[in-house]
Image 1 (cartoon, rainbow, N blue to C red):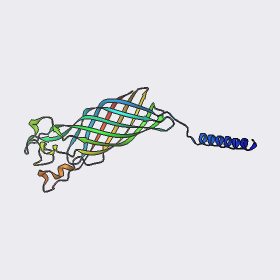
Image 2: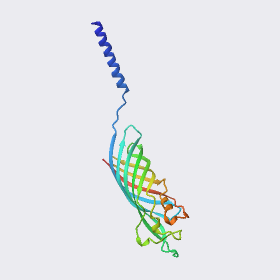
Image 3: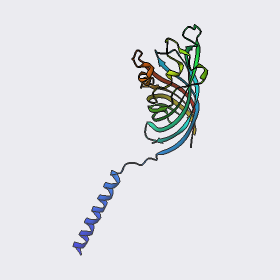
Image 4: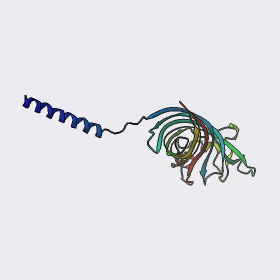
Length: 229
């Protein structure tokens, strides 16, 4: 009987030690908050380049965002897919001999995928946002077909229609801030293109002699309202 009691005691001690060990080894559990949001707003777009005289234009933006919030962390992350229609102007003139300058309006459609880190300044009510962004965009579309044979200012034979075939895959960096209460937030962001969006022009037929090196970096400022669910 004593031997049996001893075995039961040893088994009980082993179970207790095992229970305590498992209990102390477990990490504290946190509720991860996942959310989905829609975003819409206005943009201001331009291409920074020494090749052309450009002027930023207004556009609009819309998309969806998936958020992941771990309450005990100092940051939140999100994945976003957004669509934008942007506009910009490039200076040209009607003919080679003309001294009159006119603004040529171009449109650019873009799809952007971003992974963002949101640093909590005032909990979730105010965050600083930063992250990379991949972009697929259309070629430049000249709004007025009657201007297709206009000469780009600063050149003698470069036509308005010649510069439409720009690079369509680009990578950007994004910085910004978000502020709001509950499910509603205002978000301001600035994206800058790390890649040369005019690079494809260097391989165009009109530039076979490579007389001109085209370089340009896009930049976009956006102000949007985000609603999460």
